[in-house]
Length: 236
Ligand SMILES: *C/C=C(C)/C=C/C=C(C)/C=C/C1=C(C)CCCC1(C)C
Image (cartoon, rainbow, N blue to C red; front, side):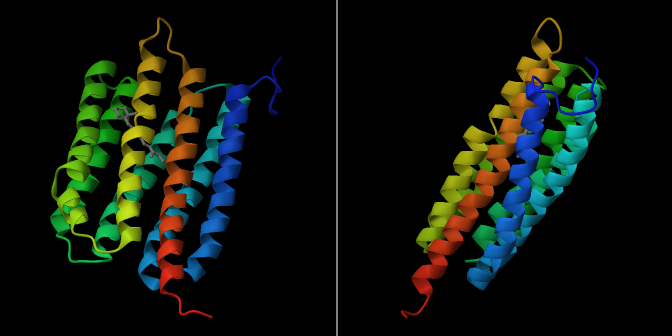
């Protein structure tokens, strides 16, 4: 039956709803917690507040588009990603540079690789270019990021980190960018290489991925910031 409300069996719509509410809760949480950490972590938390807030607003639009028309909100989705993914990638730079001087070239390499990954993904998903060729180009962008954080300059800098909490933040976020981010290309391949493009499954997979990669990513930064801040507080 045609409905403009969330239907009980609309599992894609339900997944949009759950992720949107979780993003709202995460935004409020990070905003309050920001006051209670050492100043050097505050910029990282401010960036996370932006990530979850911008994503929350996009989820309201994506959710409505899906619930009212069952169409895949690909443009809203990519506008969200174009804002939030570079912000998350910048977190690596912020975390490293809170403790030592880091070259600005590293910042630009990470930024450009993440934007390239998304531009190619958008071209592939919207049919502006061949779906598999542009998938491959998008994969190359992600692999450049992985190279940078596992073998390149970012990884070398992280080996010299003195602070245990910063070390933990770097290595856990790196794990999220490897395992958590891998969910997206899996969704893409599943969504577009079936006999019929499967937009319901694609959107459920992307919604789960966004839940993990935005909220857990922020929680890792928050946890490490708190750990650092409580260690350095004078005893009461
Ligand atoms: C908050 C949103 C996040 C963290 C989105 C991340 C998106 C990706 C890691 C997308 C990756 C893709 C590839 C690696 C290949 C091409 C297709 C994409 C864009 C889905």
